[in-house]
Length: 430
Image 1: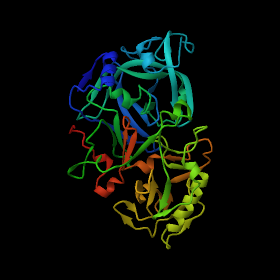
Image 2 (image 1 turned 90 degrees about the horizontal axis):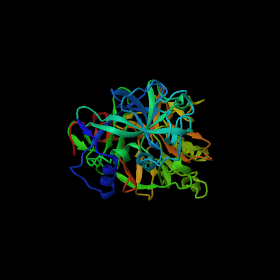
Image 3 (image 1 turned 90 degrees about the vertical axis):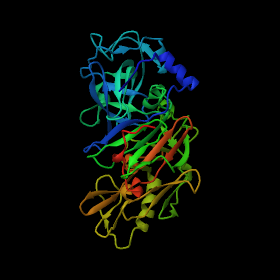
Image 4 (image 1 turned 180 degrees about the vertical axis):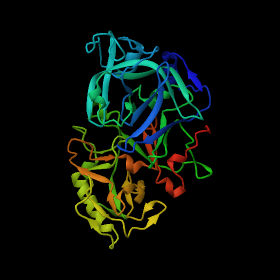
């Protein structure tokens, strides 16, 4: 275990001057999939004495946000003082005093500063997420795990903001791209790590996936050790400057078309770009969305193309099941090493030769013994991104987020390499 205690001012200097005191390493953060909600959950140790805290993984989150309304007790908790280095570093928008409680407590202190807190599951925001510091231990065991004595996070006294979180989850792990106090940006102040991370979500609720913090290698067994960050398809991250402070933290990419079984789906291409006036449209990646959401007009064309490409002996199920728009009998569907033998889907990026291929294991979901459904959801996205890539499509794939390079890399299904995200090597460092 390594305890990291350098003052914030020194850490900032390391970041600004890009000084690395030792060889780069990789931090492995285990991620589980909740059975009931399908949310992706990680766990950290926080406070003095240490308490295990379960957190929703949110790619667009600004900070590590913790519910402090359920007896937050710690001898090392310290709220940030107005106009302090911590407040300016966290880009706070306001300072104030405790107005919600009769006595001071974590989340409600005088002369402290705030940023906006967010729960992506309910699309709700709170303007008084208190900026604070406390002990944080993060990372898997065995392997590297790091203890920070003064990790900056946000503390919120509003249980309504925690609605829809999985049972036992009391906060949100934010991996936002711009916020200085998001997990990847703050962890990169440790000179062994970088502002680059990879997400590899497990498709199983019984085995863990992993988030890699650092430049790599990202090692998985198959059974031999392989670096799954090799041979990725990269595309640029796009800044959404018109979508407000929330959109600035999110991960947008350019999708130029969608192919089903090698054929282009006829789409309204204007929906695939971010509207420069209001920030709507485009394609966002989200770990807080279980299945990819498509603008209604995109979904209708996509659904039609998929049905047309299905084998002729496959029978549609009417009406569809749950939230899905297309379901069919799985009786005549063959099985392959990448899941059900179904038409492949290509998400075409910035040019026709750059695409992310989605196989049967990620394109459908088995809803019962005899029925599969197309694991995409159509809904009105008039004031939202036209495409929101959800967790099911990312499972057993590696996505690498290179923040300094402003790009993102996609593998295809790890099943092609006869391995999975649960077989990560958490004992070998870079």
